[in-house]
Length: 357
Image 1 (tube, one colour):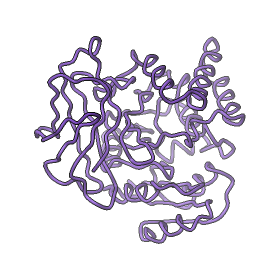
Image 2 (cartoon, helix red, strand yellow):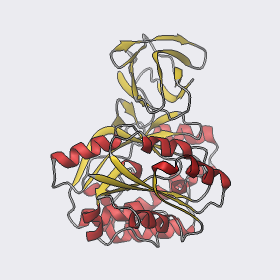
Image 3 (cartoon, helix red, strand yellow):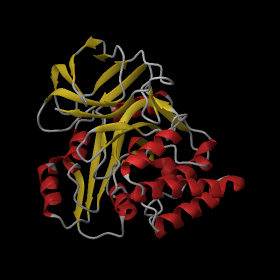
Image 4 (cartoon, one colour):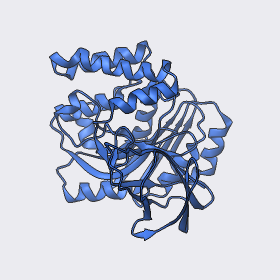
């Protein structure tokens, strides 16, 4: 089983070296295609550093992200496809989890799992709470996180491949065509990728082109009675990101998400439940010996462990400093388990961020 992974690059991103390092840490047989349209010497320098890992590289203009992704797959041989943007990275066991699932059930065409959300500094901010097991709800919302998704080339070819003309919703469009073609999807209840969300992220935009692509997809696939509601929800979320001051946006979104889904014990509004697992990995060059944990609220009888091992920690005014039992090197996945006896209804405690130190 061999993977073909395209890495399209439209502009320099400080997280790009971590993207490539995360692919290098996979145990699977992977062909990496780096497609660089940035004309930035820093991208070329990273490509030179990791040239021994690249099956294909191109520096120069293309017709956009989808065009670059297609070029990568067309110039590599893997039977399992996926792509990472220059600010995405994989958890170290992502491809092993995907391979295990595909081998266990040869009828599966697509497998995917959870994603953690990070900022530009690599701090964990939470999880992608829209991700959910496969169902017809895919017609209403993109419940698949693209960097955590891998699929067979055979099934991909059967539905006509990636739409080169789409620049914002090409992933959702592909999932919908696969699902409508009765491809079999498998869900992996594990963290598989880290995804950057900030004001520069394409999915945060609501420009004319993205609105047009969303509208076309929703009108083609969504239930007729829900189309306006679905498009309106995307608009509200986008305008909240663009217009509202951050404190107001955070308060409103926390209120709206309080009854949302839970991932690894973390509610969609960030509220910690009695047991919450924080999955952490980094791809920095140096090992980490501490984690700085920012919470909002007053925890009662808080406990924190690394897996089944207790940790030493100091509670400061605005964060908790955790000393790790052993230094954590690049590409090492650890799980922090937080226990609380707070009643979320009466004394909620919200997760804000976790940072390596």
